[in-house]
Length: 456
Image (cartoon, rainbow, N blue to C red; front, side, top):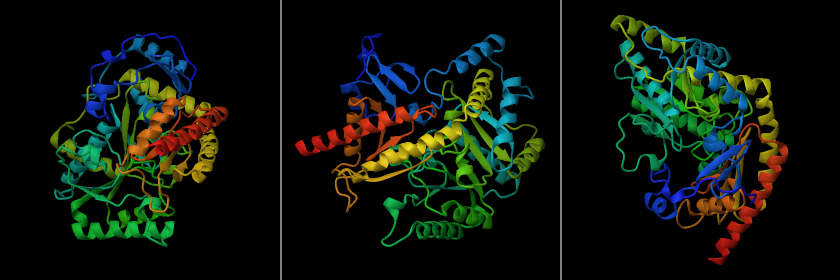
């Protein structure tokens, strides 16, 4: 690996516990300390260089050295470093961003509410949906439907919607949530079942649950256009058309979680556009600011907004908000991020370079450890197994994925093991030659993982 001189010593001095790590393993091994970033690369404090094939956390759309975002943040800090959006107050950057988002989003969105993370946006969506149900005289209409392996955050409410066991174990779940089959065709299909047949079965499952629970008890269906943290689950053919038909029949709101998919990741500006989804609400974060600053948004249409507005007028206030909602520096950076994505045609670039990346990864489907390569736009996953016929990996779930992730780091790129799959979500600015470099490193890592298994 290429190296730079050490800039900071003592990685063991970092004492706080990182998320998604085993606490004991953290104590024994210590964290990987990233010191510097430029373009699609980052360097650790030992000078090792990596391709950041996960864009940090599915999020650094513009890479790690976009000077325009730094300049905009600096200028806004000098002009108005903070102001709130409570009590009929506001400021230019938040107003500009709201106007931009409502204007560009699918689904006839009419209002934007700003939060600080994707989880906060999800929590706000839940609260407003319940508020709306009460306003409409339907106090029992509170249940939420999601999918297994969905990811909708880790706050108290968001974690209830998330369909990953690690986010539930030893935590209490407070939101009445119904989780249905994950729409992963390769993993969940029945013998002889086509993708469309699989989608039809999932639609029937949704219909059956709604009827059994009672449509007047179900408020909304929350879903990602592509399930990201659950393993880059690309929906099967006709899936979204069938889901929307059932929801529309029973007048159940559709909330599109675009936290990972939004702003070009799926080869369209929004995942909803890729799959012709017409949501009632959308949550946005991550690539909204290229994660240079924490920021998020909830968009809603008039169908949702009008009842909320009437109820807040009756009460006299909408008693919800955050100190940092619509922060002026965050808003300015978000607007500049969107401008760069549009001016540099990064959505089209992601579609083109993403197709190249997925084609490169698909060549590994002949590898003994690779069962499936799936993806859309510039997001993909490689499913790892030790037996392709039985679709199993090693004895302990996630063990093979972790082995491959360690080999990836040794070969100069950062991926994320999701159970036994390797996820890929590089910055939108990645070049075709950088993709080729990444693909070569993936091949070396798979071979090294296989050799490690054979040694054991």
